[in-house]
Image (cartoon, rainbow, N blue to C red; front, side, top):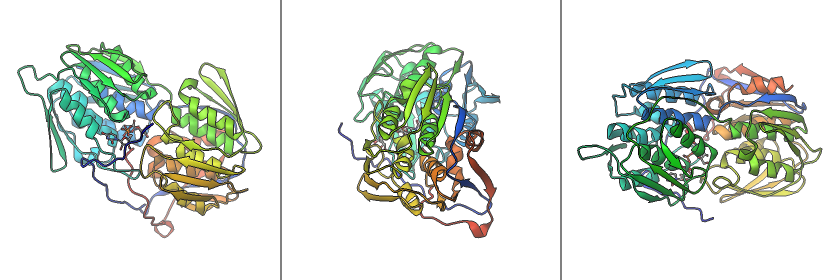
Length: 460
Ligand code: UD1
């Protein structure tokens, strides 16, 4: 597959933030085998986009299986700022956007959560106008939004970008977007989701070609269909949306988090453990399971929603290239890198989705790994042992990779930058402790804080 260089003028960069005093660190004492069962939470990336999708509905919507995460809290704040009533009841979110009054998303919140840019699609579809700040780049890359913008323009929106703000509006008496045939230069998850949401209420039919096929895109399509949208083809590279006049109330449960599940599978493999996970959807983990098997684990699908991993005693080297779904997920790249540091032989990991997503290499090398970076390739020479060290998480999945490495390392690993971890893993320590891992969150005082150049706020 051809991978597009990411060079749009619509991107900008966030400034780096260092960890601050008063933060917590995660202390991990490694080399304890894990045993038992893990309950997997609802998918973060589905939750965020379905929350945006609920703006399409002028009636009550209930989302279930919503994980309790920093990113979800931020998205709740963004919806509230748009005039939405939102209330959490356990793992359910009750959302009512009948009084959706504001078309402008607040910069300070959007800048902390890239996925919140996706509200531009439903806002434009419901109100005919949307003002959303450019989300900016983040720790893993520039991350432009040109595909979102070009797609909305193809559907008849006027879009101007001024002082970092995207102003989009639809002219004409109906203020409705028009169906269009849109070819995405790259199967961007976010652009597919933005345009699918926008098209649900457009006049006529929209066809998205070279669309993203990720399970979260399918979850969004199913949610929109439960509200009365007419969408076919989600999960393939061509999605057809026939616009309808309005959507209605629904009660919808979010899919399990395939990346959280994958992270636990890697934790099991690196500690040579026997663990099971549920609920999961095995088909969502096909590429991850194939690589785990190649590396030497047994993976058994015990029931339609339950999987067991029996880690092999030795780990075998392999090569991995990240790709859009159903290829190997970029969100699992860092965790597999930790695993391959202890494999027998040399492995090569190639990151093709994001341009700056190998920053965990330096931290893994501090733990005794032997990894060299050449462009988008990481060459990993397997070592017999990792040793615990103080390390700093640089982004969400990098922080998961350090946890996984810490579980396998000799001695104590101290991980800073837990704000990243808390964005995407619900109750991670509690779940790992239940499996027998020895780890603890400990408050840090100012003298302990390591200032790293690589701790930019990441907004994946
Ligand atoms: C989503 C996920 C993220 C995952 C990623 C790829 C959410 C909230 N986040 O991010 O966890 O790692 O998919 O699976 O769902 N691009 C452009 N122009 C655009 C849009 C994207 O050039 O308009 C580029 C990006 O910079 C990146 C690549 O396309 O290099 C993939 O990005 P995309 O699929 O859009 O990822 P997100 O939706 O941001």
